[in-house]
Image 1: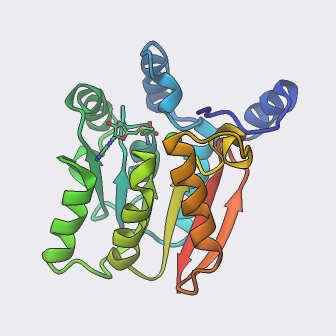
Image 2: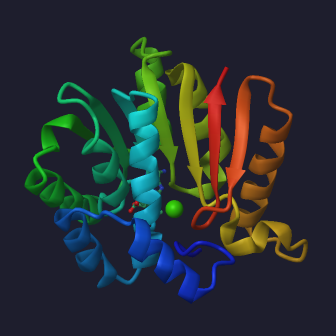
Image 3: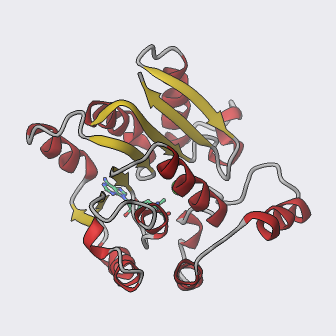
Length: 220
Ligand code: SAM
Ligand code: CA
């Protein structure tokens, strides 16, 4: 897995960052702290965070789901652009990483907009459906265990309103989805997931070569 844009020469990538990235100081510090962790590559790239925030603004998102929080970078990018009464439901299972997230959300003044639930995301999503929240959300970001993507997608589709947006991360998986010799379980899951979306009549679809591949799904 990478968080650098696939296929971009380093020189061009640097240019892109220098000429478009407007990263608030708190996000820059969170990225620096995360960089010291062994799994820092799990964090989304800063230009992707900025892009996701722009999308949230474009659709006027108020209610957002995030599946896969890690140290909270992507959640903070989106929470920062929600209206004061907006809410982000953040799903993860790891206390150590999300403790870092909570610290930065508080510092950025958005902690009250983020509800972190530490439980398998599948259970959290099922609980929200059982609580009658189908059609309640504007946007979802799927970025956790790859073998569960199809289940997360189906639940998110039910939880979203028509016109809502699902963003799915790592759909190109460092290019491994296009390598027929790669039979790793995550690769197989992502390949099957990508294939299933192509003919899904419930959605409008766009797969972008942003970072490690980002699929945009609009619920019809
Ligand atoms: N979006 C994050 C960011 O921008 O920094 C990166 C998320 S990281 C790639 C994946 C996260 O999914 C990890 O924090 C991991 O603990 C979490 N995760 C893995 N399995 C999960 C599950 N079954 N339910 C909820 N979260 C899970
Ligand atoms: Ca990711």
